[in-house]
Length: 421
Image (cartoon, rainbow, N blue to C red):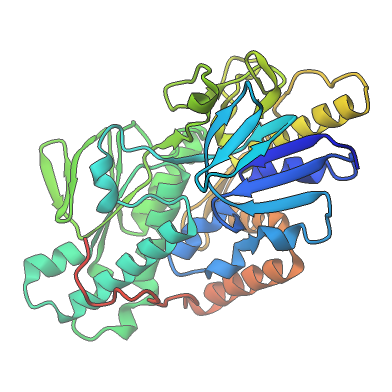
């Protein structure tokens, strides 16, 4: 093993793909993450909506690299980078020296300057977010069952989702199905089928990144499930009592934020330009401007394609970037010519609406309905890590498809019937 030190910050899709791509290169790799697990984010909403359990979409990072003596895994939070000294500083005070640094620190929720909304309108980026949303959704039904005041009961049975991208659409569809198909027989004092799911989007259509015909189909599928779709409307306030859309107030005890993302402070650490979302603007080889030994990938990076459009912040893009940077570093270590500039290959966009409808956009090929749903499911199972996870997720989906019963409807935190914002 050589003395070349590689520090990777972030154990998401990009970071892990980079580490996997550098196997056998001889470098000493240190992988740092604030959490001890890798998370399969595309299925996170299914944890939030009681379909899957946390263990089915997350895996301990240490276990993933237990057979890689070249990889050291550290649990810690990076607070800064000294590019002159080539050191990374952790919150604990520990410093890590590097010869090559890869920042794959991802993104978090963006509340457009209204960060106080986070307490009442959680986003969906982590397992903690998912279990918080799941708890609030289930508790809303439980509290409604014992609520005598009809106005408060209606607010408890109103679920507002802000943002109609894939996460918002997928959440809305599953919550609507949960209320209308899964829960009705289990409650005695309320009719869960009367629950309202409100999807609020500032743009002119849902799933704006998809073709218009697929976007229209998705909206029709949502409305068929009973979802109220509000387009061209901005949220102007969020409180524990509900959301204000323009001048109209929608009473809702459960609000979920799916309207935007904000990149990690990686660009500030490196003192390099960033776009409006805080993503670091990188060179064609994904290195930071003026810092050839520092690379930024995934949701942390702003990468422009040859057609002038930005590379989307999705898992396949992060994986491609991680694999590309691994090739660049391997070529340097072997004193070989560097690969050409990074080029993103779009493999298609997928989104699901409920348990039996989905849309897929492969460019020239566009699919919708139950066929798209099956393809969507097979694709996600394929990309899961480990045979056990694939089997567990496939079984959960099959059980729900056949029985209509969700398998993860547990309220596990201490907060049960106590009031929470």
